[in-house]
Length: 151
Image 1 (cartoon, one colour):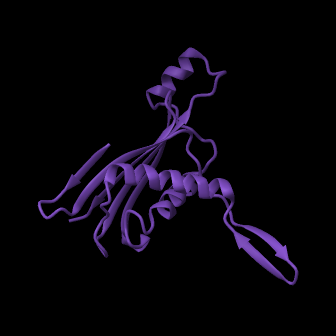
Image 2: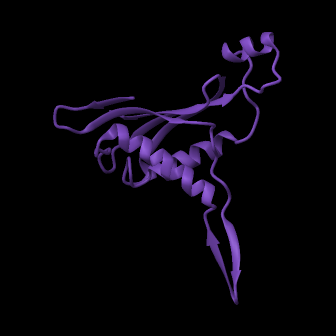
């Protein structure tokens, strides 16, 4: 966990980790209520968004990026290595020579992070001007998030 601030106390960059398996944003659900349809976010998505926000807040200590400040975000999702993997294949996975092609999709992992931090780390996600999302295998499943203000 790293927090870098300017002399004025503004946040320049932050790195934090969300422990556990990567989780992607789920599609909204619909429920009929008489004559109208209600749209809602699935409970697991809401729980994971809350966890991401808490991990950010733990490191940021009440700070957030300035309004309309352009941001660069790097997300690395580390997936668990399947139990049935051979030693040779496991070594290749840990060396990043074999990459995960499993769910959740990269775009859904990124969307969950963006939505979780919208209004928490930044004022609006239109401030995101550059992003990179990557998938790797690891013995320690997690999602590493690095956000920096673009100068």
